[in-house]
Length: 105
Image (cartoon, rainbow, N blue to C red; front, side, top):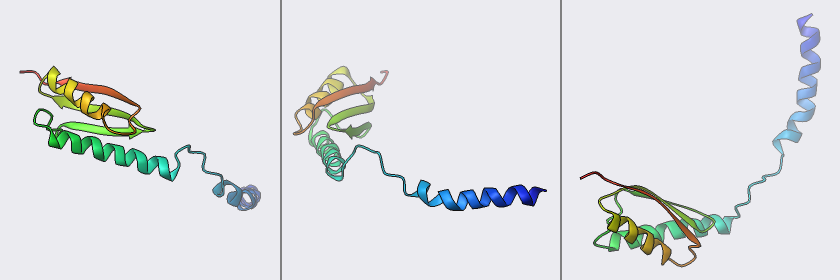
């Protein structure tokens, strides 16, 4: 009895399996957008590395469609503000979300 039920299910799976596997990619990121976001992230990190106040070691930078998200821990509000300022000045950055926390002293 179990085999009688299993055979039709296998047949249906074999017929519709290729349709499901060929589903269209619905993501909105193009290759160019993805590369641009990666370039922005690299430029922001480079700006942090060059700055004496913002070392950037404990700052995570993520970019999506030109919007930069900063997360991590910094030593002061001044360092947090400077990180936002540096990220904002990078070409193609449309916004900066500063989610940095200030380490307790």
